Image 1 (cartoon, helix red, strand yellow):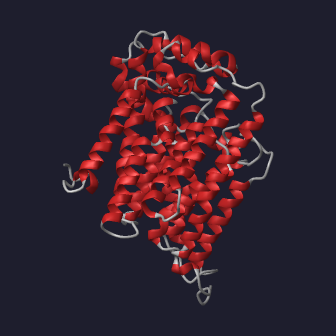
Image 2 (cartoon, one colour):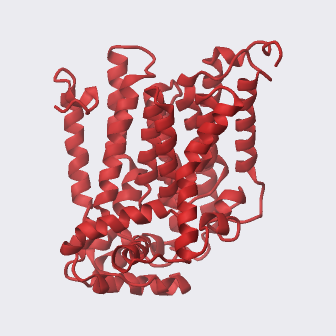
Image 3 (cartoon, helix red, strand yellow):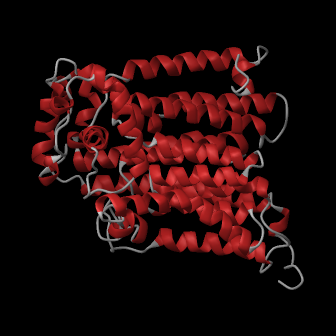
Length: 453
């Protein structure tokens, strides 16, 4: 076996069950690869085809430009097998009336005789990124963090691998709804692995690339900087390195299309409000209503880590080997205090895998399944098949007959709210005991501040 594979996949003494589950996961992915698609996927590739074949960008949507470039490169490779570009890509005109036009848009695409092949090719980079992220997570799970060596280490690693092969959130996001959430997940896991192998500056660049792929990893930059580095100067330098790829992307946006993208739209659209106005209010709405819990929680988290480094409280800084804990806590805080579309749940899957590998928190997997079920149920009750139509896209018109295009209930708001609250409670049931465990296992969290602090 290649040396770059994690030990559980290449050591003849232990690899058999891991390879068996890899085969199960591989079969599942091959089976679903030509099936799931969404209008979101086609819109993303429409923007990418402007870059790949016309040398221009869609100036009204200068977000996640790193991902658009990846899509554009892949289109140049896959185009000979996709048919004429002008016959495949459709301007996302359906945004004007999603409820009325998405079914029409999907029907036109699925009427192509080669739709199944196009679906499989368009999703292939997502599936590859998701599998590589799982392999890197197995590296992380095996190399550090198990409570004991020997059998427990092997059991935990197997638990992580089985979870990743069958993860409902990852499978839905990657193979059914078909979004590129695996790109930033892969970058975050790679950055964590690099940090744990004492390559913090490489971790900064990789995390920065992840921000260009999907903006949300930007919330991890202060966490990485405050845990990995000591002193404000080095922390500021690490932060600058981590933000450099994103800054370069914004400069490129300005030069090519005359706008800064995320910087310009932050707080002015429902998507920008994810960053500046994240709130928790009844129902999965976005906007200024409710309390800005996530920004407040992140401020508290950042001040705690900074205070530990500066000696304001605690006996010494947070240990560098505890970085994974604070990465997990950040993700749990995010999903406990904000509301997202169903496919965004893939973002939390590495945190769940790390809990399975390294934590003694109980019922991690059952609580995660409750979390997933709550979000999926709420999404279906509120939007119905309009959100899930593409999930069975490779089945052609059958997909639209299997799922109602509109909400299944006349008034599904109350049950949807109950489902969202259930998901939030499940997330808090993971967050609170893990926070307690993290503080208990950190000797520096206790004791008087250092002299001069």
